[in-house]
Amino acid sequence: MSLDHPLNDLSHVVSADRAHVWHHLSQHKQYETTDPRVFVEGKGMRLWDATGREYLDGVSGGVWTVNVGYGRTSIADAIRDQLVKLNYYAGAAGTVPGALFAERLIQKMPGMARVYYSNSGSEANEKVYKMVRQIAARHHGGRKWKILYRDRDYHGTTLGTLATSGQDQRAMQYGPYPDGFVRVPHCLEYRAQWEVENYGERAADAIEEVILREGPDSVGAIVLEPVTAGGGVITPPEGYWPRVQEICRKYDILLHIDEVVCGLGRTGTWFGYQHYGIEPDFVTMAKGVASGYAAISCTVTTERVFEMFKDDAADPMGYFRDISTFGGCTAGPVAALENMRIIEDEGLLENTAAMGARVLANLRALQEKHSVIGNVRGKGLFCGAELVADRATKEPLDERKVQAVVADCLAQGVIIGATNRSLPGFNNTLCLSPALIATSDDIDRITDAIDGALSRVVG
Ligand code: PMP
Image (cartoon, rainbow, N blue to C red; front, side, top):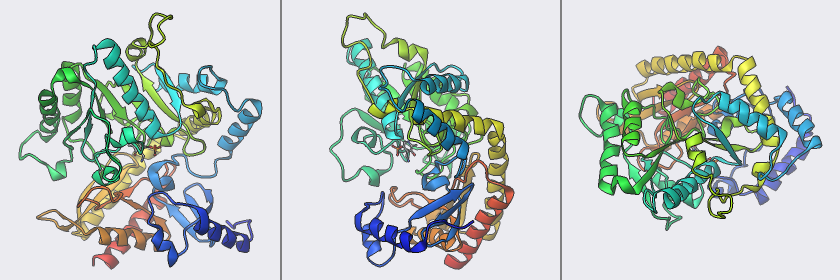
């Protein structure tokens, strides 16, 4: 595949980028001596940058987003057709793709009923926090206003969602934060915080302890990732989720599942929570909803939650007093409809389950060879390998070495990720989240790159 732009134009693009773009999550000092990487084209699992270099993308657009792969002309065509017909109307009214995608989505989510559109994962989560606060004000006489969140989980970049960041370094410099957000312990069994059998139940019981400490009457909701993403690809231990559900029911606490990463197939089912028999009150999703072809996020609720916002029509405070301007853009839901069709027609859930098993098998084989791999975990095409300096003590591998492994893979033309420098002392997990279209060859090439990188960097 060749780039159809002349390279001298692209070198201008690189200097324009260097001069004017402020990159996300980046220390720009590095660009005084190196060029920023500018991507130009993508097809399937492959990307090309402005120098013409080809990469195999093992992380679906860097942050587990492009689930159906690059270069999907059918999504682009669907967006174009919709935009020339009607590009936008504010969300106080409906649009054709908005209505049809909500209907299709709810068919995949038994027990859920209503879809509220916005643009990003942060925004979708923030909507839930506002809903919980309004429910507290109107239905609990101002009680039940606190929201629990978990150590190591992440829910977004706004001040409200950062108040629920279980990743300290993301939140550290941006306070003070609003009150009423309370942390519960993480459930990573490899780093078990209690020496007990039935670790999953014990980790859930730790949530109950926080509820009892805070006062059950003050706690309205808990937000949890079904499988924690940037916090280290943390798959829940056996017995964890049934107990969490039980605790929520016992204390009338609304369960908010953040599917911003897991949603739309990443773990091999439509949603991560569907592996664990969870019955949530809120589900939020963003990245994979339209695979990055358009900006869209959804806050999905049960009818029971929705009914709490229906009231005397004359009461100006009864309804959800919120808007997201671009939640009315039709590009999002029309792209999401086509994205969902592709996942279904191409059997991508099945492929994800099969290829995910291959990633885990390959990583476990590497674990036999490289003692630096302390723990391998994952669900579907969402896998992690935690690197340690010493298997016995589980001392995390130095973050600079972890980054050197990522850089070595990049030099081999394979993009992988690592926990995002937000967990003091624990930025030591390699993350793999290839597109759901990945083939066995793609998977083997990614894990072969890791094999070579580990030999070179760690020995
Ligand atoms: N929730 C989770 C689990 C995430 O991983 C992210 C983004 N990395 C968000 C929420 C925030 O999404 P966004 O960046 O679209 O606001």
